[in-house]
Length: 145
Image (cartoon, rainbow, N blue to C red; front, side):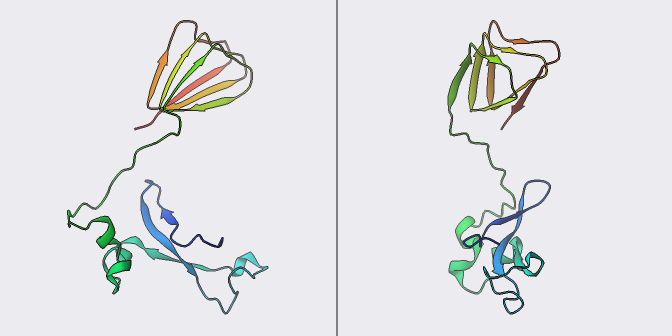
C-alpha cells in the first residue's frame, strides 16, 4: 500500500466501484510503510454499500455527499474524457505501433505500414482522403462513450 492511497477504489469486472481502501489492516504484524515483507502488508477494504449508509458520522457517510437529495439511484456510469479535445492526425507514415487518444480525431493522408498498428481512442473519428492501411498492417478504433 502506498502512503496516501486510502480511499482508492476497489473495482469489479463491470468497472464499477464496489469498495474503497480504508487503510492498513493489522499494524502490529507489519507497521505501515516499514515492512520488508510484502506478504505481511495487509490492507483493509470497506464495502461501498456499508460506507454509503452505515457510518455514524454524517460527514463520513457517502450517501450524504453523493446522493444528498435521496434520488435512490444505485449506479452511475462514467464518461470517457480526454485532455485532447480535437486533433488532426494528417500526413503521417506509421512505421511503429502508435495509439492516439483524443475526443475527436480527423485523419487523412496517413499510411499504416506492414507489421505496425495504429489505434485511435476517441468519441468521434473522421477518416479523410488518403487514409491507407497497407497489407499486413492493423488499424483499430475504440469508440468511447
